[in-house]
Image (cartoon, rainbow, N blue to C red):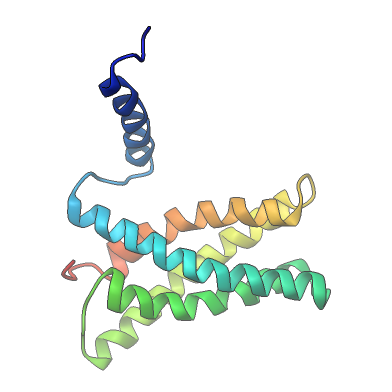
Length: 158
C-alpha cells in the first residue's frame, strides 16, 4: 500500500501545502510565516466585520451590491490597519510614520477594493453573491499581504 508508512501520509499533504504557499509567494522563513499567520488572523477578524456589513446591507437594507461590498470592505480596512501595525508587524513608530503608513495602507487597500469589487461584480451573476465575495476575499488576501509586508510595514521587527 503506497500510504502505509505514516511519514508518507504526513509528507504528501505537507509537500502539497508547501508547493501551494510557494506558488503564492509565501516563504518558509519562521518570521515570515508568523507574520503570514498573524495577517491571516487579523484578516479573519476583519472578514467578519466586512461580511456582516456586506450581508446586512445587501439583504436587510437592500443596498446595491457594490455599495454593500465597499462599506463592508472599508470598515474592515480601518481596524485591519491598527491590528497589522501593532500586532502582525509589531512596531511602535512616531505619529508621522503612522500617517505615512496609513496612507500607503489605504492606497493598497483601495486597489484591493477595486479587485474585490471587480471579482464580486463578475462572479455574482454566474454564482451567488456570497460565493463571489468569498472568491474576492481569497484574491485580495494575497494582494494585501504582499503589499503590506513589502511596502507598508517593511523593516518592522517581527
